[in-house]
Image 1 (cartoon, helix red, strand yellow):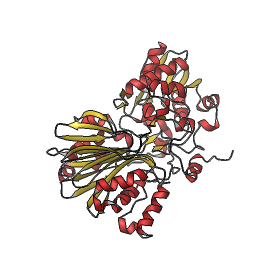
Image 2: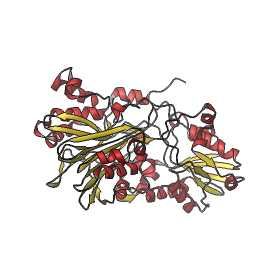
Image 3: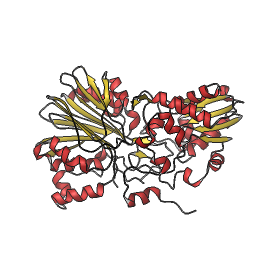
Length: 487
């Protein structure tokens, strides 16, 4: 099964990274504004959703120009490049960091020529019926389809672009209405032709997508934080199953599929920025509440609560408030650890987590610590963290996790390990605690997590926790994602 990032679901790097979202998308229609720079800053706000590649497509009404490359937004674009991307509408894309898929061909936005002009498209998510879509494309064009429609990438994004190109005789809008209802899985699209900006969200609304207003135009983005950074006013979320068109005639909205909301629960735990709003709730506020619930469900006798920066901070604050245990910063994060083109030496690599975090020995020495983190994937990071804290003089280390055990892979755009590589399916909580070397370990319950969001359980995708997938998964992909190793 193809992914929105161009990888098979089971093609993983060797690092014990946390869960990562596939991508961030941005779009702007604003005559009279420097849309390439607005898009640059929008992508900058969405950098946490993808650090492998970045790209921007801009139209001046007559032609579309695309610039994309590997690296962070600030590495890909400079003043000269942005000044050359002139126009009044644009889309942008961040793609997340992997090893196996680190190729330029899979960078976005994609671009294809169509009978009515050009089409650029950016995608966040993961389609689950790519085999059917590939057969549909071959049926329309024959076995030479890659050469006919420019399908030069392995991503499902390129596949959607190629399909839309085959229906574009009647224009981009008609092509979208022909193709979007056939897509299954998770997708948020921003796409454009020479004259109009479009945005669409799958009928389950698994990944977030929002609409904002500028004085002279409109903005769409993966998160409200991107609206804030470009000075746009948040209007509303783009609804599940909704297609939005923005051009000189204004903004128009229509349904291409019956909505059945299943928003990703993990956005609330980790993926979204804390200053983002989803379903009318600030993520920072939700994570504070998650921490309070965690303190109620998993108390600890300790001297201080410390977070794992940055993702554990809001929940740790909530835990401290609810428990009455003082909150302290016991770990300092290296703010510049992100994508790097310089590989560490073997000596530095062996230091592992110290590349990212360093303990404040004077703060934690002799103290009983509650360490709040967002999740445990394989367990290697927590194991190294606990060891580092003990070496720094901590008397006790009690780990508290603001999500339930991650037991199932995600097929909707988050990079989790296969089930064989996840630590939770093979061990109970006590065994995991012993494995990471903590004095105690406690997870929030799934019921407690859902209650903390304020969202009805039936409107959330919780598949990585309970294995109940709201969109059918192809059997071969399920086998690859859930394959167990022999004991």
